Image 1 (cartoon, helix red, strand yellow):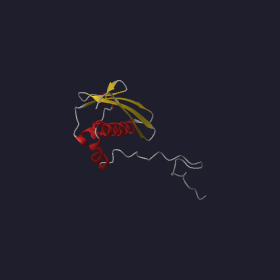
Image 2 (cartoon, rainbow, N blue to C red):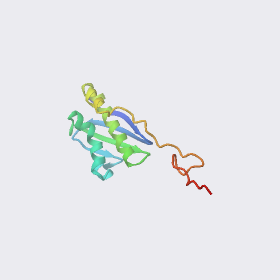
Image 3 (cartoon, rainbow, N blue to C red):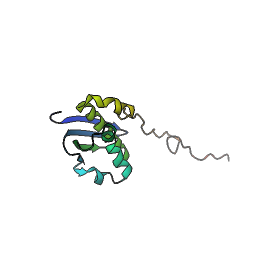
Image 4 (spheres, one colour):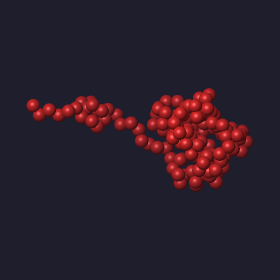
Length: 129
């Protein structure tokens, strides 16, 4: 692999633009370390999951720009972007990543609120009289 691999990952309304190159394993998100950007241990694991699946921890540097959505959607978008970049770097890793479902775009989105209801499915309280 030579140069920088550029991929994109999406989840809910979050978009992650990922730039991967050979390096020491640093993950920089919006100019900050990923451990500072994602304070919870669960979200940090989600960010590292693609590397742990293929056993490539500490081999690549990641620079990511995250935009839109919430913190969990951003973490999962970053995971997908990293998984796609690892596929481009080494085609043999595709099977392992696909088996874990890291290459699949999660289609679940927030359901819209309907008129005459409190939320998407919740109704106003029914009053008989």
